[in-house]
Amino acid sequence: MARVGPKRNRILAFIFATFVVALALYFFLYFEQDLRNYLASRMGARARAEDSLINIPKLILFSLLAFLGVRALNTIIFDFVFRLRRGYEAPTLVRNIFSLVAFTILFLLIFNRIYTEVNLGALFTTSAIFGVIIGLALQDTLGNFFSGISLHADRPFQVGDVIVVGQQKHTGIVEGITWRAIKIRTFQNHVVLVSNSNAAKEAIEVCPRENLNARIVFFGTLYTDSPAKTIHVVREAVRDADNVSPKITPIVRIRNLGESSIDWEIKYWLEDYAKYNDTDALVRQRIWYALRRSGLTFAYPTRTIQLERKVSPKPVTAEEQIADRLSAVDIFSPLSPEELQKLAAATVGHVFAPGETLIRAGDEGSSMFVVHNGRVQVQVTENGRPRPVAVLSEGDFFGEMALFTGEPRTANVLAIEETEVLEIGHVAMKHLFETNPDLAESISWTIAERRASLAAGSQQLAQASIEESAGLLSSIKRFFGLR
Ligand code: CMP
Image (cartoon, rainbow, N blue to C red):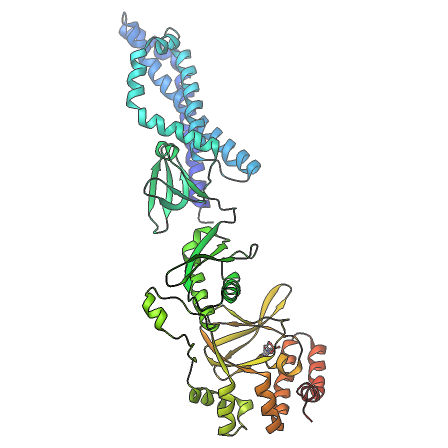
């Protein structure tokens, strides 16, 4: 909307200018003969001077009209016909060349009509010196101009593509190609102009916008870490990161067996290459979290330290803290301090990055989680779009539905911020059920309520879920082999 105003003003100004020039020309031609007679009577013998006085303004007025006509034609051809047919804007250079050629031709025609006695052809062909002077003076300009034309004809890149050009390796997004230079906006938001003739002489690296461009990020792990595990862990951590294309699975491979580390590279494909700096950073972050969760370790550059160090992944939090956290979880409130201590010893801590998926709907699941720090979002997919169901924070638990019923996971759970969770497995829960029979009942109520909320929107389903809760307790008991 903001652009409509100035555009309309330009059109009005254009129409007004055309009207004024046409009117001036009309009056000029209308009174031309009278003017000539008047001047002839005043000047007498100096007929040539009288001719100039008439012809020069005539040439100017006709040229102005020709100029306005060429502009109108330019707009009609490129703004309407070209854009409608091709679906994109015509390059500025092509438009300028069109205007220049059309105007020159019209000017020469007008000039020839007014000054019939001047032989333009002879003037141009005989003035070799004129040509040499012009040629020398415009050497660089013409070089840029013709290189610009060849760049347009060749179309090696388009506006919006990322390119690397010049000896200084200027990298940025192409904003346009003028008759003089390629305009690039760098990732520091500077504008770099690389002259067309320089660009034509050098290699240009083009990362087209419509292309799946890849990036490579490096990292290193200890020799004691399993390569197969590293490949799996890193690939899974990176594949659903923002801007990483889901069309091609990232490739994790050993680049080198270094002095103090296994050197790895991960190759991934981007949806929007212009954001590669941010995506590289996110990929490195994901790798850090994934390695930490899986007990894999980054290699340090100092070999001596590496050889001496015993790798032992530290527990995320101390056991007392964990027992403290578990005691605040409502379903565990009936447990004695000793039982809580035992349960704390059986949990495993994991840290997840913001945006990472902790649980995927439909997966098998044999453990539940308590949020120790941070927040997670529970969401279900409806018509291909995620619908948030709940946000769980410190002291809340999730993943109990699959653990206690043996059914697949009912929802996706994603970390909203950096989140630390405590994982409780099947064995630990079975032990708790045996010593605390009431536990199964309170959990079955939570599951029933959550099922009802998942079915929200469908009254029937919600009702069915609540009724079903009666059977839930017995199915939990059956699943855990309790009486
Ligand atoms: P589970 O089915 O194992 O995996 C997804 C988890 O999301 C599920 O267990 C519940 O713990 C949790 N969940 C599902 N629905 C809700 C809800 N309405 N409110 C809170 N948590 C839920």
